[in-house]
Amino acid sequence: MGFMRRLLRQKSPKRKEVRTRDDYHAFQSTYNGPDCTARLDDKILRRIFEEVCPHAMDESFDSSEESGNDGCMTCDMRDLAHCALTKRQWYSVAAGLLYKSIRIDAVHYCELEEVYAEQRKRKSRNGEEIDPPTTRLLQLCRTVRDNHYLGQRVRFLKLPYMTRESCKADLARTVSVCPNLEYVDLPDGFYNGDSTCHTLRQELQARCPHIRKMKFNEGGEQLLDSILQGAFQELRVIEISKIQIEPSILRRVLGHLSWLNEVSFSNVSWLNDSFFHAVNGIPDFPALDTLRLSKIRNLTPQGLEQYLSNPLCRDMLRTLHIKECPLLTVPTLHLILRSATSLETLEYISTVSTSLPMDPLPPLTSRTLRTLKFEILPSPQTANVMYPPQESHYHYLTTSLLSNSLPLLRKLYVRDPTFPESLTIAPPIRPFAESSQTAPPPRGFTQPLEVFSKGTDDLEWIFTSIIPFDASTGRRGSLSGGRPVSSYSAHRGLGPQWGGEARKSIVVPNGFGGFLAVPAADDGRPRSAGSWSHGGGEGARRLQGHGYSMSNGSVRSSFFGGAGRERRGSRADLWR
Image (cartoon, rainbow, N blue to C red; front, side, top):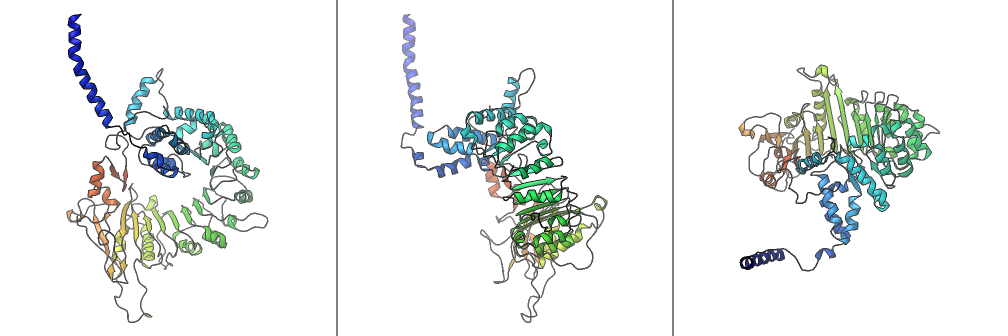
């Protein structure tokens, strides 16, 4: 016993020394001053929490597959939940964001997915793996049903495809206690009258009067007729596809929706020009902000002109999408643009098999158009011919651009990788005119233009920024950071003097109405999105050094791996 006592006495000072050193370091990392966060008001706290969980501010009506944010949404939501539990002052602000826009993902978009996948395998019973999104939906359902105050805060609910298809009963129990719900991802059977979605359909009609978006597919005529009975009166966006209904009844349905601002028609065989005509006793086709037409085979430009002859409709329409409508051809686009005097975005997608006629066409003219998506695709029969028919269509677009008929156009999307080069070979004009009366109209651009081009088989857009010639000073335009330049990465390499494998050219005015392409020098000038994809620039290397990967011209986190996302200190999961 005496030996043990001496041994313990010899070790005690060392233990005390270690304990004192640990306490010293712990004391050094502790802040004992005033709590400065207590002086932050709710607006500042909300702005901070929005950066913690960016997808909490997602108020779009896009499905879970179409919408998304950079990073791991599940981890961001977990961090926001931890903020809500940190202080009583933070709870109301953080909880309001946490349950405003809920997104349940099937996986973690970070390296933690490998860790949790291994844990789920160990916890599984009888060889049945745990389905994380289904478990999270069950827990969400239990939470909002136990706390109706939280259920009233839910406005957007987005789910994976398989979850909403297999958990219809759980989804019905969830939406039944969310009276302020504006958008929810629903199974496909909900829109076409499937009997398995009958309970979900009744709950949504009775409990959620503020739904903003709804689809009506073939077989869903009864759901469309329920609007006349008072359901879904606050709809703003509707999509109609392959539905069989009397046109007069559909006009009455649209007339009941006073908040409606976007309508999409797809594969509606009976829709023709008469649907837009004014008829006594039937409400007129409503004035819309966005009109989408896809595979409408009986609609002509005269029908759209009739619709736009109404001053209210003409002043309201801002966005028009035309996709694969055989009678709405390129030679008739100038008629539509002439009637739509307030149009800001035009998306035109068409597959052509013949070239444009040789007779001259009026140019595309619009004083309000800012974004043009002009995608002309060849038919399978003419995909490999020497002179494809889409070349004449893009030549017509080039002529319209150089005629200065689209003065406010800022963004242009084309499905031709060589289209930006066609703008550099504009024919010269006379540099001096004898008088202002005899001077020809100026050719070329008078505004900056961003061109996004890609081929039929390409996946990413190639970005080219064209800087106009400043006629007032006789100089090239100016941009912060140097003279105006544009980096253009083409689909094929042109030698090392052009920057290596991909071409990087500077498109500048030549002083005679055209443009000139010269090789780009590595002098630190501004670069476009095309250079980011090749890792160019000191800024790209600096961001890559902090754990980011560069793709599609933006900073995005990678799916897995330590280089894609900064490792989180906590491995807790909000829905586990």
